[in-house]
Length: 412
Image 1 (cartoon, one colour):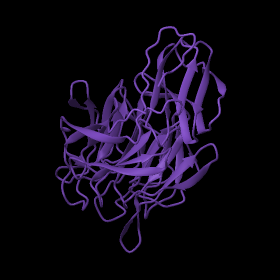
Image 2 (image 1 turned 135 degrees about the vertical axis):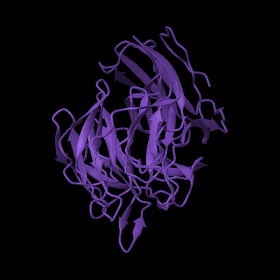
Image 3 (image 1 turned 180 degrees about the vertical axis):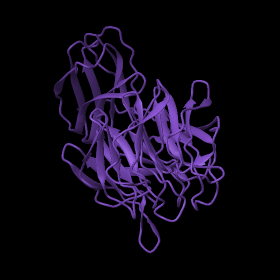
Image 4 (image 1 turned 120 degrees about the vertical axis):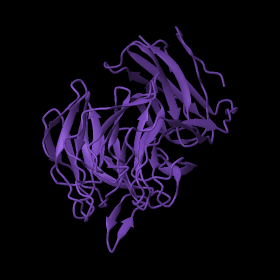
């Protein structure tokens, strides 16, 4: 396929269609944690290229206040200042150079395991913890995500599963109440893609543990939770990670495979099995890899493990589209200064297409267009946001029929 480009300056072009591509997972084993642990599903995060893991239950079954850091640069772990209280199934998020911990359980039995409402912030510059405003309720097994530099605390359990949704503002140190989920969920997982929050699985108590396959999406612009396609299996004790705009669910209840959710297509596929069959493991995306950390058996009886594995995605069954004129993707001028003109011509209707701008590290910088493409020639102008710095970027066009189409551009 030929790509007509105008006003070309310094340019390197990579233009690939991956039609009906299936992602293949490539696994690597990394250095074990110093402290074997389970019950850390939401208690792992990344900051400045390092992974941090908090608390959990150690190899001897004791509640831990251990706080450890993994450096992928030299594949090594270090111990940091202990958390002020021993806690398991707590939550950990990084915002603006600091790490925030909240909630969790302080007892091994009986249920509800003495949930706490304590919350603390960690400063990596001083290797120290400081108390912050308590969470609105005492709870554990919660899911947290960061959206617009605020922490969303979703679901979890006190005396039973909750549908609650709270938001913490690190700048003001204040909690606020947001719209609750449609379904009460404990042991769930949540992720953010394109400014929306996705919540998956979990469980509630009703004559025993009732696990869930359902999932829902929160749109902050409409303040609304909407049901989305359920997971293929009921799952609790799961963790999740986002890679290249898709969400990966980790947790082996009913199925040991990694599940991949495509928000654009609202569809699931099952990938390869996890190297270790564990639940309540930590999961973190870093450097285009998903790290799975520790965890324990589904029956909660076996001790936690120290193992760390990571996976990256390799597309297979690639087929370059050779239908001249079926899709013409043109951007000009190149390099860009103030705005870019976009022309996308198709000979058939393409539903749920998106055109996004990424930096060369694979981080999404801006959404340029989202919607259907129809067989008509049109040019749209897109003004470059002022926060985007000069450098090389790539535009990616994708939908459920093809994985990606890329053009690399220079912004001056």
